[in-house]
Length: 156
Image (tube, rainbow, N blue to C red; front, side, top):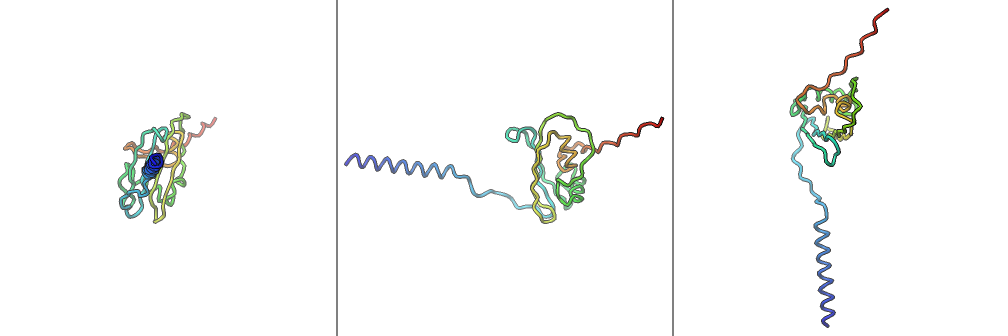
């Protein structure tokens, strides 16, 4: 009789421990988010290095009117010309060093009522600036200007 009681107690304890483990290990289903801004907006982040251990900076770009970004006027104008598609921002002709120092650009938001989601890893910040214009130029420094066209060779 004692054996049966002990086996039941052990099984009950194991069942309770398993239920507790499953309940604690389950991911939270609700994500807390604040209200989304009205108009065109993008939450922009740039992660330098490995996305797991790199440093991340970010900002909220608002375009109605342009604000919240070091170069909001220029970034909003480029996005407007590209229809809100970051991949369609015109490529800037520039010479970038062949140094691998990866940066990951991420944008989430809405443009003209449509959701925007963009993530891309570039070999370095120069290539990111050439491909995305002022959109991810989060620092106060002026965004990289297009390189001047090469001068024509002198006539001989």
